[in-house]
Amino acid sequence: MDYESKGEDMIILGKYAGFCGGVSNSVNQTIESLKKYKELYCLGELVHNSQVIKSLEEKGLKIINDLDEVKDNSNVIIRAHGVTKEIYEKAHKKNINLIDLTCPKVLKIHNNVENYKNNNYFILLVGNKNHPEVLGTISFCGEKSIVLEDISELEKVFHLIEQNNYQHIVVFAQTTYKESLFNEITTKLKERYPNRNILIENTICNATHLRQEECREISKDCDCMIIIGGKNSSNTRKLYEISCEYCSNTYLIETFKELNTTSIKNYNKIGIMAGASTPKESIQEVIDKIS
Image (cartoon, rainbow, N blue to C red; front, side, top):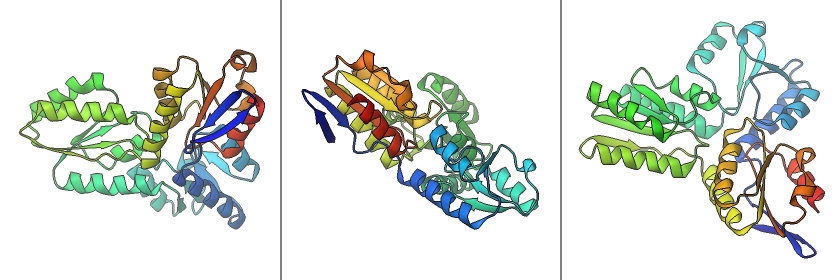
């Protein structure tokens, strides 16, 4: 962990706070593409951070929600979360030039689930049903698949497995899913079916794992935690949930403007973690305001 102190107070900033490699690559490639193309569109928000999106829009990027919003032969970015199989097919029909900035780890998951689908496995995808990454991944899984959002839904999965007598089962995870919950789900699945072929593909990104572990350790050691990131960011929300388990004085903010210094001025040790889509400038602004 990196430490920055001022007087008797101490600020603890996580080493893994902020941009992950996939997000950094997406943002940098988008900036380079804006220099190359006269018109450039992005299908959905490139990353879940309003400050990053605003900066890219000011440079000329146009956000769209459907390929029907652009003409044939347009230049369209596929964001870091990835898209559905159907979007690739639609883009091909419209002769759209796709600039695929899907995180390499997500693309690998797409390829792997297709291989398991072709080998007649039942695919269990653990993640947020409405998250863009999950929507993209499940489209490659075929009919013998289901998304499990929370451990409370396990009975429904058990029923489906037993109803169809699935003997070969593989489990994948959204790359930003909470690892402790994923482990709990897979443990219960293996306990329920000790004699079935169950494969566990822990596809939680290593950066996510490190960030969550670091957040857990920092929150145990601080009397106040500040989590910085987009309110619609899955990985930021997981950091907030983890921090709340160990530190009751946890605040989730997008920018320094939301920070109420009056409410945190009496804390001696303040921990800071940030989601994978949070730029370093946003983190530094929070540190400056606290200092």
